[in-house]
Length: 215
Image 1: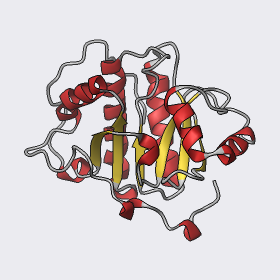
Image 2 (image 1 turned 90 degrees about the horizontal axis):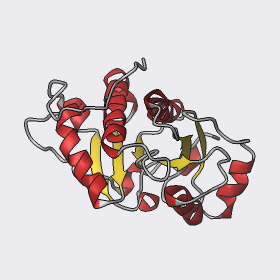
Image 3 (image 1 turned 30 degrees about the vertical axis):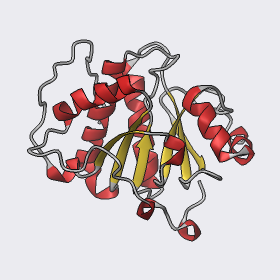
């Protein structure tokens, strides 16, 4: 259940008790999301789903022209919603496209992460990688956006931890990595670090393409 959350003044202190079950599913890494061998990567897309700059452009470039042709059939996507396509030339079998808010709307950003996870669950996807959503040209403050991402994933995992094996927070910049490193113990406190700081994702996460469902 999504709830209104205020992240304007995040305190870096544990909000939850330690859960090795949930912690074992979380990976943080600074990498190129298009190269990750997870079953699905999330695309921070625009309304049209027809490609753009940043991670959106990188995913379309790496996936090849078939991704664009598939996206044309989806007739766009509203803010906070999510739609799925194949990954084509990507290592990932699927791409889950979501449109982040442009106006720092916290609930809509929560919906992006929640709806991506729900779409993964419905398609029996066991590993998923998220980029930073809405923090680029859309201007969502990095700390608030990362807090929303971590809390929404934590809330979803508490209810559906048996539905997914790995959730990767894949950041691009050193600054985003520092933000997630500082916030991770707040939402996923641990007695020990476990293996939560990359690489943590292997080719074993790849789906069996013959058994994959049609998006």
